Length: 486
Image (cartoon, rainbow, N blue to C red; front, side, top):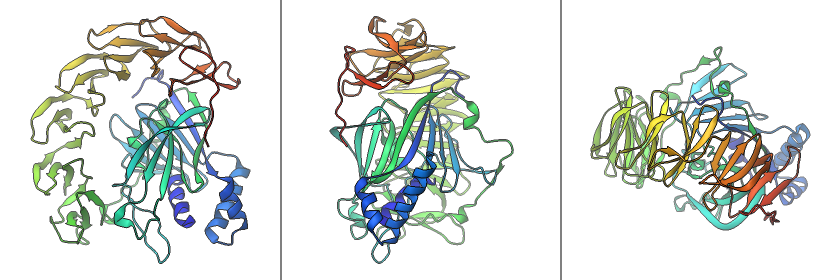
């Protein structure tokens, strides 16, 4: 049992925005419960003994095992102590690379993948697939990590298909905060489903937990491949693409000679020939596929090619039944029936969120709605976030609130601005102090804090000085006590 969870946590550990954009740095350390440490100290089981030794080594070193830098457009995750590697991801372009500093090499990668192998042994299991596991958001639970209130999500590991391998009731706890951008990498694509960054991931008393969260200056070089690094191109022959669950009780299989992949059912009956270089997981009734020469197409749940593999790029939107497509280096949106919603005329298009998608023209960004209508023209340097009919944009050094319907700024400039999740309030910063204002720019809570966050369940985290103690306030600015549930 502990060997399996230990393997899962080991895999966790070892895995152009303007300079004014905020960047968050999160340090993670190995976290072991007192009960687990006590059991490990007195146990003769090799995996528990290794846990105790690992915990002692990490505690003595006092360095984070995982460091992450994240904002809404970029992710960098650096692991140390168990083999250093770095993954950098550009969310806007979809490009992601894994860097190996000791060898000064790098490889192209997916930003994250939820395809994990299942290794059954006589009395144990190793790593498994998270593709079909349910992520449940738990109401009424809270925990403060690194001074930030977090919510709880549970990844239910008890897939009935693997009931003989995975212990009944096995769950992975994920404590996350919506005050930080979402963060995902490596084989943890389920973190994409969170509305913010995970500050703890673990099970059975063992996990990775954020030890500190800080705002740092944006440094573009963090998200670039160093010039001296050499690209390593690994062929598909080096990757086993067999038995990956796709949904609808369908799985992949791989031809040994060609290394191409096809689709089979749960009884190993061949459904399609091995003719694809890639097959994505089904989103509802459709899945994106790649031909042998790397062109994109779409299949339905009956594995029929409803869109031939002739496209430069296709991506299913997770919120709407739409496809983002690329044609002649421009991006657009269409339905699986190839009805064009947005013509291919934009340098970049995001997936829809709250009824809007971000697009770029040249170096400027705008918003379109579900009808493909431009609701905010591409006149803004950065659209940092939007809620209902309001958006926050960045121009030069200053943030502004913009009314989506009128396209007019409704606030003067601030050095920081974010939706506060509380009664039409905004977190704002000016003159190096944080406070809270209304959409109408009325000061609701004075600008007296060194740092302040949006509200979570009516509570915000604030610091009055750089070295001051963490405080919690309500929407009226009153200091409140927060009971931490461990």
